[in-house]
Length: 205
Image: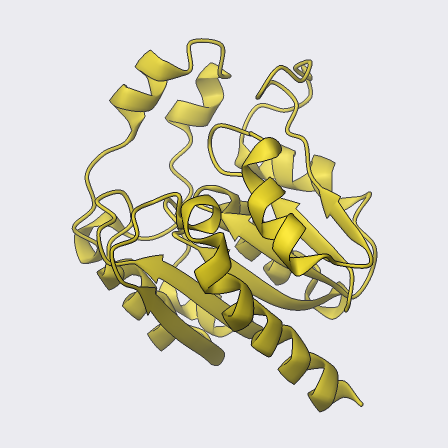
């Protein structure tokens, strides 16, 4: 199995990935920590998502596969744009943010998030990074999209939109799953991810 890099969502929780990692049992993996999130010390040099993307991109090994939850998808897509030759593929799960809101029908997460995560960096809530369709179309990498059909934060419409944008993408809808399906439905999505990883390995051999 190739090296897997897990990017948390807006909570920054590294423990969020534990159920999936336990089932996948990757030989080599990395769970990224975000400065200023989930108890990690903040960094004065990080003032927006672009800064955070730049910060986390350096320790990531070449030819890794990025697995991103929710807002982590913005970082994964940004790295795929700037470091496409260094990344083998993307697995985007319930991506929120980075997509034009008028096509998604998603509820606004920012006020609830600010009330729940009082210590989060202020810049994170203020950052409204959006990638246009033509930018997404430039990403020539295999992309696996995993969405829950009961997710108000990232509706199926977001997954369908992204599938139509990426050159090589497949979308799987998990019935009865909400926003944290990577944790709550880890057993259900593990075979899907394993099949995607196997396809990548086969295509490169």
